[in-house]
Image 1 (tube, rainbow, N blue to C red):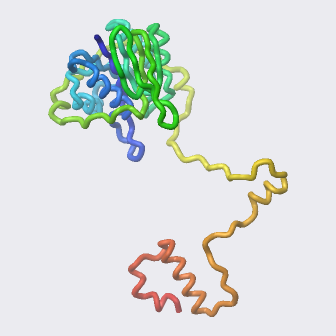
Image 2 (cartoon, helix red, strand yellow):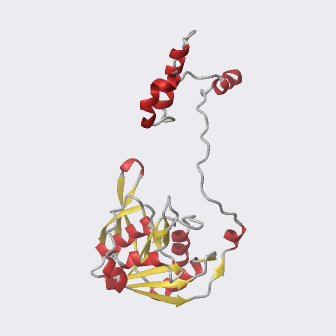
Image 3 (tube, rainbow, N blue to C red):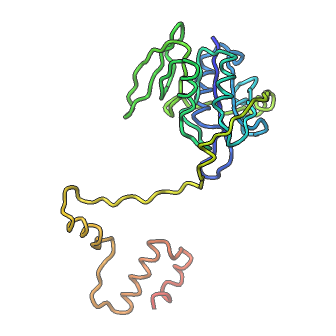
Length: 266
């Protein structure tokens, strides 16, 4: 039984630093649990062989990681297809999508079509393996179902799969990264795209369904009651005290100003 695992470089959502991709690490964890030993696993990465974050995969127990030297911005699918056709694996495990780059999630589907392999997405576990493979597929709302596929099969792994083991430093240093020179093809679609840092999109306001245009306009423009208080003809001391309490409650003033609160309220 030959198992191939496709591994990509991840990106930390806060710092942006390169790391192992979480879904690909879960795919490797499934492969390590499924195989008799790491020697049965053929791990492949398409990208830069000098990336330090690749050693996190070696630290999980891999002996060797094959890296197809594909330049950034080039299409990795032709190189992966040619490599997988040469080794002819029974199972190809991979994450649903990459954390960096285009991240379209189309690579497993394109490879399955090119290799003539079966495919089922959102794999959360592998139940049995023989002439066929039975997998546990993750469904919405925590549901699961078993699906049996003929081999060869491409299995994109869902976030519901078991958590990957922590990489060991010694194993990461001992593991071998083996680069392979390949012909890379420029990704025309990606070259026409403009990339920029992600930012949260504004949320739509909740408007009453089925209301008239005037009611919808009123819902958008009317002032809503907040958590404030209405003071009618307060004295200067009362108004200052209310303002001070508001600033402290919303942390515009820190605890260090508490000692001078009497002077602030005047």
